[in-house]
Length: 115
Length: 211
Image 1 (spheres, rainbow over the protein chains, first blue to last red):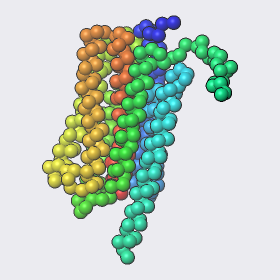
Image 2 (cartoon, rainbow over the protein chains, first blue to last red):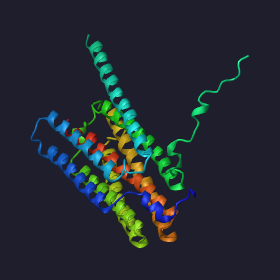
Image 3 (cartoon, each protein chain N blue to C red):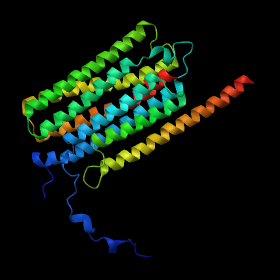
Image 4 (cartoon, each protein chain N blue to C red):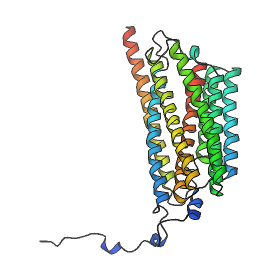
């Protein structure tokens, strides 16, 4: 079998539709508007607002990964999705690990300075 | 002496799935998969810059804090420019699928203008900070701010050059297997930059204004 695809076959490899872009766009607009209006009005406590806008950012990221980058819609074996999810795990280890270590170091050094 | 024993020779029969066509042997799939590798390493680059910013965000060294520097309207305008441009980039791809060369180029041009708008706003902001003496030399907070947002801006600038080249290619060669593949890869890059920007406006600007 030939391994090169024709233009028609290549076009089927791309999974964007008008609907997916419109859904992604309006959901992104919604989450962006929510985050900015929350910080603009400052109706809640600071901690609550920070948790809310981080949750909103994560949800918007999921929306964009799904509707703009089309992760999880390619044919099996889903290499793109698998690499993407393993990268997310590495990223979380780096980010959470660094924040944990740095805040721990910060507390220990500051305690010693105060003595 | 014992003969060399090779294990599992009896199981080397064809896997039942072997007659399925492998979906990743053609140039298109290989190029897209390769570009995904690049995007994932880029993602790790941005992740480390984000973590650096979060660790250093209160180390102002007597300089201005995030709350004193940042306002809401500017990042909101930048977000809108980038969000609209990512959708018009998708529209260019949709037109390319339909084989309409000219409207694909037109949507790319709209995407380009929106991207230029974003970059102009960002350069203005940087220029303002530097004029006020708040450059990356002022504090660790500002160093990490310029490193993170500047790296994103450099990516967007590179994307703009790439987009101009793509528009010229599509205009000149039409929608072919090659130009369509490059358009798809470019759209991945552009959507990825909007994805990174979500976290910049949340962690840098919004939380900066709050704290």
